[in-house]
Amino acid sequence: MSSTPTTDKPTGPLARAGNWLDRAEFWFIALACAGIVVLVFAGVLSRFVFSQPMAWSEELARYLFLWAALVGAAAGCRNNQHGGIPLLVHKFPPGGQRFVEVLVTVLVITVLVVLAWQSLGSTQQALESGQTSLASGIPVWVINGIALVAYVLAILRTAQGFKAGAYHPRNAVAE
Image (cartoon, rainbow, N blue to C red):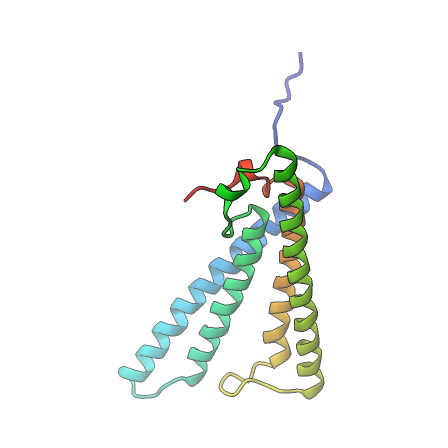
């Protein structure tokens, strides 16, 4: 009899990379949200208490919000946490359900590839132009680059979710 407990969690380098990615996404989003709160509070305090507005704080809070939303959307792809109409899919026989599952995954990945490609183009263009944001001075390629990373991450997470069965109609989240 073995003394090692059995687990249902996958092990190996891909599972460890997925776990690391889960933690990285969580902490990125948590820190971005904390940063938004601090920046907005500091902006309000500086404007209304000290009468010295910090224009860059609003702009940076806006970028953090955008980045947190994009990375959060990518994280949601892993567990199929995005909207769908499982009621309609459940009307199909199992073979039809599998077809819809594959079709939806291919369409989602196709759209994400187009978005990533477009984001790559705008990131390269911003890098070549040397443009910076008005108030904070952040290079625009950094702002666009986070979107590119989020789209690529969403592609990987969609494939990971599909492989894990998260996109199967039986796993649909009822709301």
